[in-house]
Image 1 (cartoon, rainbow, N blue to C red):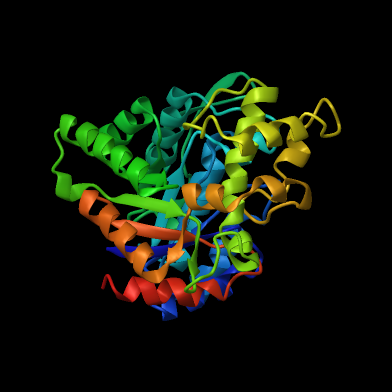
Image 2 (cartoon, one colour; image 1 turned 120 degrees about the vertical axis):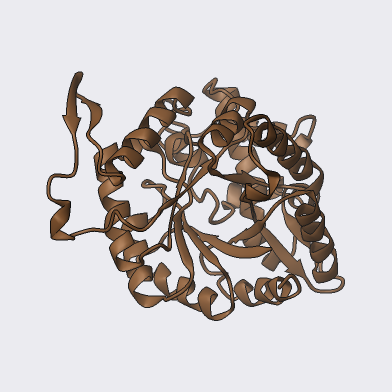
Length: 355
């Protein structure tokens, strides 16, 4: 089983990617959330020239935020700096779009986008629409070798629902799942494996990655300790943010939200007071996947942290990851948060047990 890291992108994220490589991690994924973190392609470029082995991926890019020729160009440029080590993670958009008050893009639009990007990377002429007009575009002078379209760039889809899972299988892409607990994670990978087989693929070819936040607890340490709140609390807070979006802005749910929990109801009531009234999402998503805001901390309970993250003792976490591996996941990626980089050593110790 491979182990990766995912991180809110910073200008110096290359340092953490380099350290992860030294500790034996196979992948580093960079968030592409423009209103919350630094530019992923700039950070990946710095990581590319400071590492030798670790794979570098967008975790994940949202098509509406970067037009296809720009994304294809950026990926090909990175591929020159780290040939054959680039992963293109893409999704319909949760954090990056909800931080601007928008819901997910249409799946068919994402599929068109993927075909455009890979068409360009493959040297093809593709149809591209902009400003209501359709034009044919292609890379015009690849012979100058200013970027690299020769080495393969692996595709990974962040896919939760049946239609995006079917698209993942149809494209024979890698699959990224955000896992809060083992039971749901197993159900999701079983569904993905079913779609994969329906598409006529061998199960051994499925690359299934579980993204998760968590904290490796010391014996007797509560799940809402200061350390656990910092490392895993942001994952629990995401469930609060998601529920508030869907209750206040009527955005369509992209994944099941925990229901019948007082923490959810309490936070939604708080979020209804956020200013400005016509843009509550601005305060709602502040700190998203990075820190727990003081006002929301009382809703991020120990029980909610345990229910939504890999927060447990080292032995318990190993058992959970083993269950994911047995169900079909091929990579476990721990999502780190700013200021908690020291946690990487805890997860490296766990990763060694699976290599």
